[in-house]
Amino acid sequence: VHADKLYEMVANEAVHFQLQGFKPQNLSNMVWAFATAGVHADKLYEMVANDAVHRQLRGFSPQDL
Image (cartoon, rainbow, N blue to C red; front, side, top):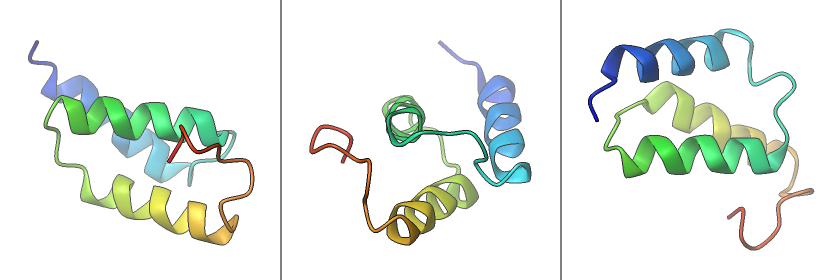
């Protein structure tokens, strides 16, 4: 399914709001969906990685990683 515009909008909103309100499971699911769909969202991926490091992976289960 091609939904490039939808992925772009979701990524832009998540980055714009600096992932506020996202739990580790939400972040994992979003990144998995983007990666599985082959979506390049470097700013989003970088922000999620930085957030995980900032949290020191607290709240992330092994499955989330």
